[in-house]
Image 1 (cartoon, rainbow, N blue to C red):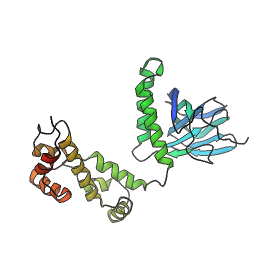
Image 2: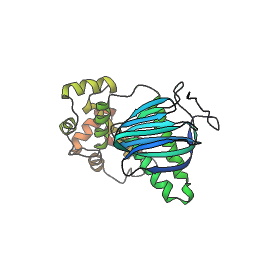
Image 3: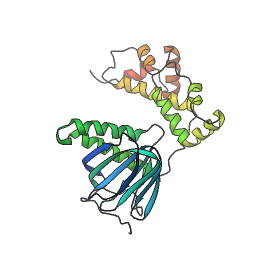
Image 4: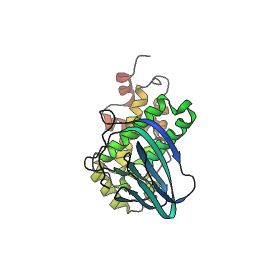
Length: 266
């Protein structure tokens, strides 16, 4: 059987109309050939094996997402057993020309999996599986799919380090050496790859994120209600005087000057 690209029901690039979403909580070894009259997206959470879609064989492993077109017979087999999250949607616009069955991989942090779990919870909690939040979560899922298909992905170790840094913006006890210990790569090698892909070394990257977060806090509704010392603590600086020096080095202005110029009228 020759695979073909199916056109979405309506124009535009999107995924829309969640019909169902489920999980396989226990390992499955064989799933016999069957079809759907809609697009099915499958995210494999454990195990590895082979998914056969029409005449195409796709090797899957944890973190792989396969987007299966309507009306094409597909089956799965795995010697060790597999689990997955699977959802059917009314409309799916294939983002990859010439690839009838789009295949993606999640990042080190499992961001797509997190979106799917939120989608699963919202779908089964809302009346009839329909809600504005379900639609918005589908939009988020689509944006991830677009970003994953639009170009070269970063080195997975760089992605992991970026996530560790962002997750610790507010943690003043965080140390870069602790992040390096979680990545199986030499520190010097990781620093070189990180700078090649982001344009900054890890410390510069973290510092820029912290200062950017400080500026967001200063512009927010909290401005004028919290002190610069409190802001420094909220963005991971133990010493407010050191925070002020770093802030001025990055922005060219002291925190108080910057706040005075950018604070919103409350």
